[in-house]
Length: 354
Image (tube, rainbow, N blue to C red; front, top):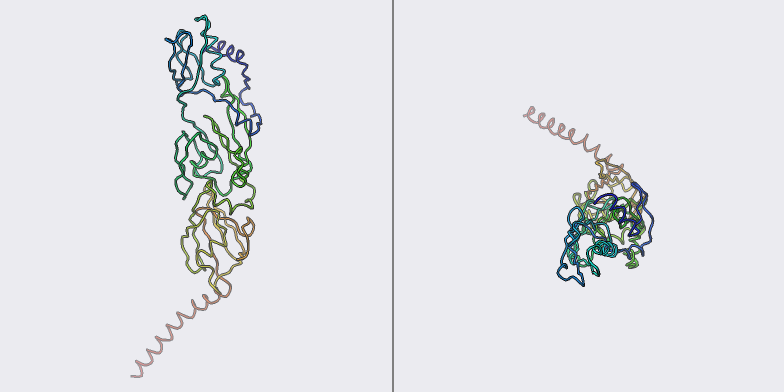
């Protein structure tokens, strides 16, 4: 479509166009729920001309966003709402028909492609339809039906990470219009309000091109252990527990299990050999770096970042030896070789005597 024609369409429909790189406008969650469907490549439309039935029929939106209109030719409708597209087609058909009374509707919507970035298990681009199967890490398959929502997309991406900030999930959406790629709006969602209090308004339906951003929380929320049971979180994690515990090795745990509970799952610390004041947590980060933190564990301590942090998949926990255990091991290391020498010397003296 020529630039002048595109500009004329923009002005005729009253579509606001923001300049390239414009900051997103803040919108309330209720406004997102009221957004109109935006036509895009892959949609199949039905055009019904009431006074010209022979010109009616289905129209498929091509990759370039255009549709072949009878009597008019190729016209770009991508980026417009149905109301805007109907108004524009009527204007074009009025040049060829005396009474261009028509109805335009979507008979087969395209798959919805959304981007998930930040604190999800598998960030990336996902295609969603009205019939999907989602699965959080280690959890059962979940049958997703109906129009896809924010929660459906997160479940298909494997669920949230332990560090996800559920109180500040950002949903970014393009604005309708010919130049919709250049402007967008965003709203902030509180998914904790959804999973803890059932506020469904925090789980809006998704549109093609939406972006869901889940930032990293500064500290683990108080509800971390409770969140481990919801279907947004991975259900099972694998942790290595080594050192002075009764059953060292790999342990399967529920997601967000605190450090103390992981040590208990490995049989608990050995009576006098374990130093509960010197427990190390080794964690491999997404960027490949490793962090080492030391904790003093207390079996009566609740989950907290400072004293009893929730664990992630792949964490390694080492319960170090106590001072008494180190001293005992040192004595054994010295005395065992000497004991062998004493036995050999005694045997040598007996042979010489005989």
